[in-house]
Amino acid sequence: MDAPISVKRFLEQVKARIEPPFAAVWVEGEVSNFREPTSGHWYFTLKEEGAAVKCAVWRSRQRFLDKPANGQKVVVKGALNLYVAGGDLTLDVSHCEPAGVGDLQARLRRLEAELRAEGLFDRPRRPLPAHPRRVGVIAALGGAALQDVLRVTGRRAPGIDVLIAPASAQGERCVPENLRALEALQDPALGCDLLLMVRGGGSLEDLWGFNDPALVRAVAGSRLPVVTGVGHEIDTTLVDLAADLRAATPSQAAELATPDRAALAQALKGRTDRLLFRMQWRLDGLATTVHLLKDSAGMRAAPERVRALQARLATLGARLSGAHPRRRWDLSAARFAALRHRLAQMGPRIPEADQPRLAAAARHLAPALDKRLAALAARLAVEAERLRGRDPKAPLQRGFVLALDGEGRPVVSARSLPGGARLQLRWADGKRSAELLDEP
Image (cartoon, helix red, strand yellow):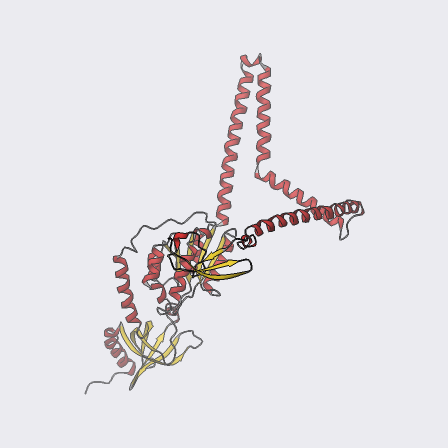
């Protein structure tokens, strides 16, 4: 009989032998007894009839997985772990997906290969406009993705128009509504410069509409550049591969499509500083030339020319000072402060000094309004008379007859109807039926 070993030593030997062959195993079963204690980890049992295994998902891996639910049939990938201190076997889960998603993954790979063979994913990407004036957004109304886009565009570029085309983010309406929205926003009359197609994260089934071949082809054939932000960073759909630019999230899509107001202001300041530096450099050069000419022997006999150069130098300096952007800002600020001061002094009542001027304005307003109304009434009468002149029934009052074919359309030519055709003849006071005779 061999010498006995301790329980811990026994379990350590078992752990060393059983864990390596099951370091990456796929297991399918039904979730039960799901728990999420204060530690933040997920614990559940994966079972089928007559068998069960404990599973654990550590908190650090949860952001890559959808939370399973009791009764849900799932496929998990994990490593077998023997907990020596408790003697428990646990499957350390690193991947979890609903059962059947593997079929969707295979179908997705086939679709990608078919569309790639068409050249949809290898076409040249169009550059985004540097300063768009209007951006079209395709998103579900009330969704978090649309709110993220509106928040980012409002912060980065509040002067840009955002035109929203609502479309369902999943389900049966997803593909047709996104196709209609994509086609509508490409209308040149709307004036969009580029399009955003955004949606929040979700499972592969939730995002499946954005793998539809018709929608992928529509994105690739769009007249305008398309930026997609479908799902989260780990989600990739076929419309992302067909778009001109793919963003990891809806917020990033809005950032890529809009210029940063702060960056533009900084660039404008840099250009203004360079311009002022060059102007000052030019003025310094002119001043040096004036001084050299003034000191030369030839210029001593021509003081008028020196004074003219000095006057020009002073004029350029004054223009430079007045053209500085801060000068205009200072003048506007001073004017605004003066107006606020005057408004504060006026108070809620109109000053007595301004009341005669207000009364005179009121006296002139009534005649001017009457004159304008009279002019509009005369114009209305002329247009009404022109409208009566175009009334198709007016000639009937003068004895003319209106001939209509069997479908009620005017007969404008004798050759337009064959012999024996039925006619309707209308006078001002009634109508009669008639038959068209052949020419003799």
